[in-house]
Length: 392
Image (cartoon, rainbow, N blue to C red; front, side, top):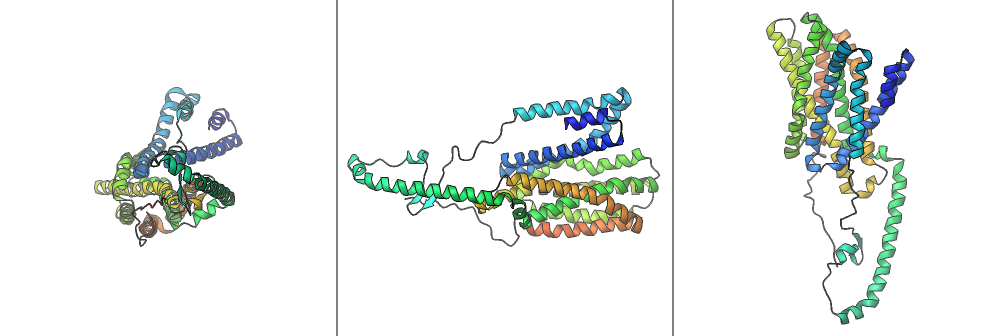
């Protein structure tokens, strides 16, 4: 990222700027994936949606304030001064990453158990709590304990060998395993929808506003504030989802967004009533997309946790959390690529009303997989999380 920023500052040709933009995109994708994965693995599952709400707040306001701050600095201090802002942010970012405390290994202070014909094999920490027996009983049981420990050691070595073999097999197929999970596919589709909708509005909304309201580009940019304003409350949305679950709220967000998108056809002139209606509808659309975005960002991590709880060996490959958020990043990039093309095409061929109707229908369709798969298959019986331990 620092190298890309330096190229932007020193580049004088189109090819240098293209190279800088490509490096910036690669670095941003890598940093984003690692950040999401660390957050999902570190934050407790009961507070993951709230944490993703904070991330959504930072992402939205970073994109909103970046151009404004850059333009202001450029106007007041010149071209090179603009790059002092990202350089300072990069230094702060690197310092925080060096100070970051990663999550400790899961086997340190936990009870390790392996089922066997003798019951649960326990670690040395738990064996210290065995009941006291007399010296005579210890002497009589010494020979049988020795043979049992040999059997247990053999079983542990065999289980370790199977686990390592399973991990090697999973390394090359982790992405395929994730893509076979309906919850993952549903969330990736939701990410593509929100990214494509917002990127489509970034290209079509200014043209519609300037043509209908006879505003300048600054006025059109003002309306985008209503689209991003709900992100201020992303952490509150995440907290509510942590308490009530994400399925109902995300489905309601999709349906509400669909209705508001279709109602945008009512805005047809520059009267005050139409301006207010546009602002209110954009505010509601921003709220709906925020709810879905926060739910999807957290649901990817929750899906991986759920798959690991059901079958620890199912994701025995390298970094399932990192690869899942890499897929999410790819889905978001795909949406940003598709949105302007699809939105611009429909705007030319069918006009503003046709384009907003299309996005409304897509939003209705998005509610279906969200309602069916978010938090797990809707008809799947709920397991209360019973954990059975077999002791001697």
